[in-house]
Amino acid sequence: MNWKLYKNELIVVASLLLMLYALLYKNNQISSRTQEMLSTKHTVREFRELITLQKTWADKKVSKKVNKLEKIVPSSKVKWSKKGKKLTASYKDLDPKELNRLIINILSMAVQIQELKINRNDSSYDVEFKCKW
Image (cartoon, rainbow, N blue to C red; front, top):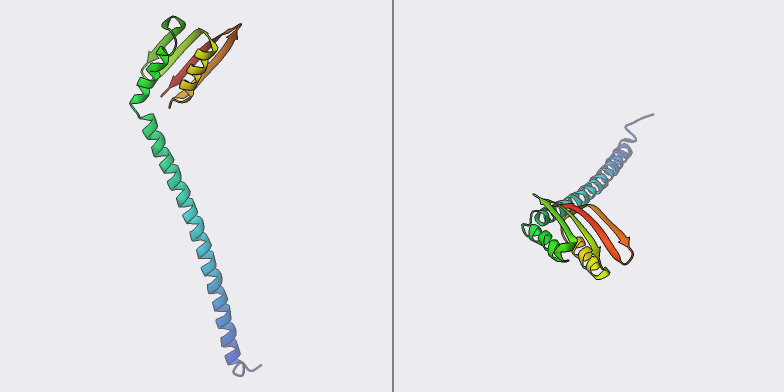
């Protein structure tokens, strides 16, 4: 076989193969860059959420809000123990309205609830609550 006769055809085939390789390489780079950008956006979103949570947990008003839990119901129904950033509270003989008010306030605060027990005694409720912030 005489390669000199097919010299032009070989150059065309080689250039087509090179163009195909370049096209595949470019598509691969674009898809990997797209995945990298999506990953970066997800990481940035997580960092923003983390910063928001840190600001919420570092808020100095949380202690004041926790102290309001003691004053929601009459003091005769509350057994209160607060040490540093940990709270243990027991509420006895709460009526349904007091229980509802207490639970709404507990769930709306930025605290980590470690224990929440609610026991029903006839028409009253007993609540044990432990949290930290």
